[in-house]
Image (cartoon, rainbow, N blue to C red; front, top):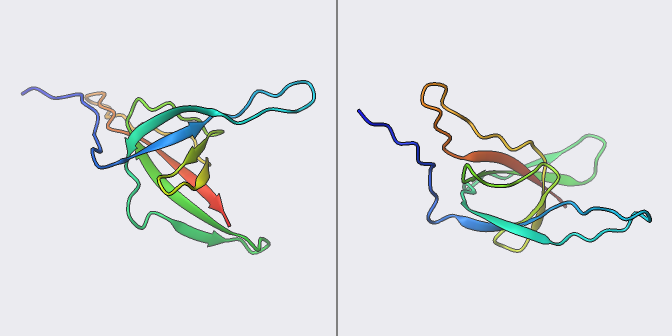
Length: 115
């Protein structure tokens, strides 16, 4: 029996623009510029979970995203969703790996929007 090591593909997924955190000059200035794109990514329907903290008047919406296993994304990155909304990556990207075959189907991370 032959096992495949191909990553999962999301052909109807969305391409997400990645903005890497800037490098700051001695005066603390730095611009965020488009670094690269990742995808196609799976953004599950109803993945957004609004949460309101007791001491915070703003609602935080968290969205789970699954990207190809080889995606270059960091916790400090910002992403642009297909609707044009900018969100911040709030979790360390996790690429699950099968302990028996070594297969990594996708990279999972969470993003946050503050309203």
